[in-house]
Image 1: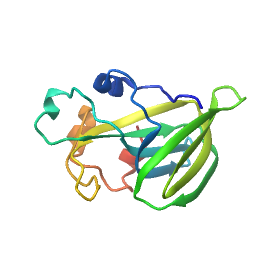
Image 2 (image 1 turned 60 degrees about the vertical axis):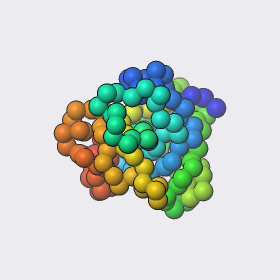
Image 3 (image 1 turned 90 degrees about the horizontal axis):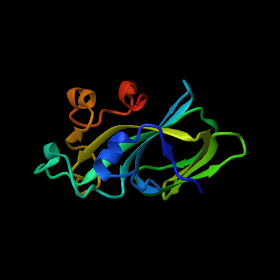
Image 4 (image 1 turned 45 degrees about the vertical axis):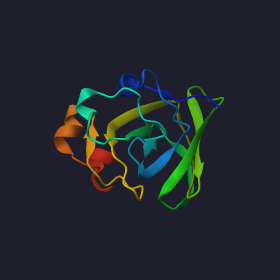
Amino acid sequence: MTALKPANAGELIKLYGKIPDIRRFRLRSINLDWRGPTVTLRLDLSSFPKTVPPEWEGLGLDTVQCHLQFLAVEDLSLSEWEPPVRSASLETLPLEEERRVRVEVTGAGVDLAFTSNESVQVGHVSAFGISPDGTDETRHVFSRRIDAARYASVPATEENTFHGRI
């Protein structure tokens, strides 16, 4: 297994001091886009930062969510998708072809595999207080100004300007 190589992990590094472990997470959605082609995963990270930005303090936030977008996707197989996926794992295996990896996302309710460029885009980083039933349909505090100005929560999955673009 090889580690993910986020091309733009600055927001996560700013929050966690390093790139957090992205091997286990709660998977919220999968967006497939023929342009690119790309696969975008919306996920809740398995840990919350020890130190949070001042604007997050006192808001009852306990979960960080982000999108991971994989580029130049080929050989996609989605044989199971039954959300919610409370615990998913992500493994990447380097391929002989330069800068390509095999990505496998598995868990109770998901079985997704594809090849992509080894570089991954990170976007739409937000924090929210998870509901007792595990949903994320609450207020999100987005780290990027443009997201914060446009959204108070995660829009519906058909909102391509959010789910399809990082």
